[in-house]
Image 1 (cartoon, rainbow, N blue to C red):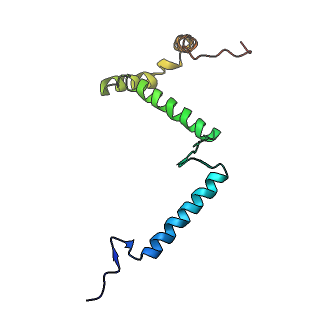
Image 2 (cartoon, rainbow, N blue to C red):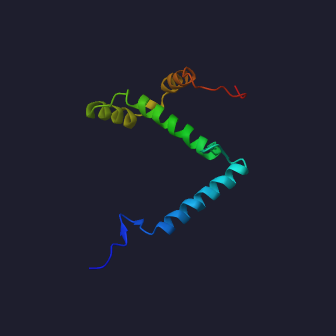
Length: 119
């Protein structure tokens, strides 16, 4: 059986360890002299910038979550209600002037309704 060359991936040769430590000290000293480190601690300021595209995507995500939450508060029509609506469409009920007026009045009353200059 031969000699053990390393334990746990660490170099066993003292010269290699000493050389690595000296290199680290020299690098640290050079950085200290250049003002990149203060004393023995490295001072660093991390900074992150968010692109306009990322901000826009975040806004879209927030809007989608808002609308999804609002949508979960709506009721689902039953089969009977859907069949009644289909019959009214087939009879032409929704083609009347009264239904169109009611629809316009409801749309104008919505909080997000925007009036244009052509009114």
